[in-house]
Image (cartoon, rainbow, N blue to C red; front, side, top):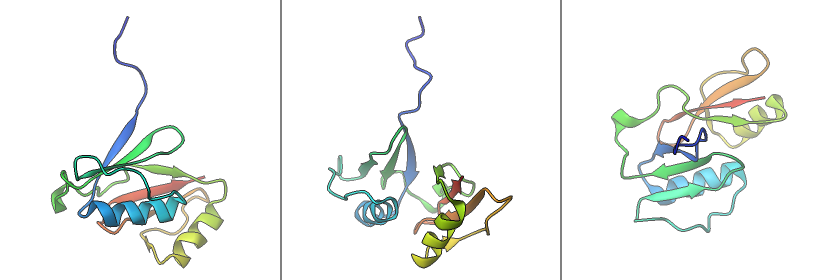
Length: 115
């Protein structure tokens, strides 16, 4: 029996300021920003399935994701794109192939939204 499960619990995202990142991501995803910040540098965004783990201790400009390490889901790529545009999120691509687009978080991490 293998003691390691074929399941991802979380993906770490390097952020420069844990409080600001928590507030930004919670606002973007419609989550309350009332969870605990662990050890002064980690905040877990409780998502359905794999969690996003914001971590300011691992942040440096060299650690920022230049390719999407996260793919967020949407039922409507057009509505998601318009939502992000209205929030003035830095959009890196238009809607590509009718199914996805990329944007940056405030620290420059590249993230994908996909239908």
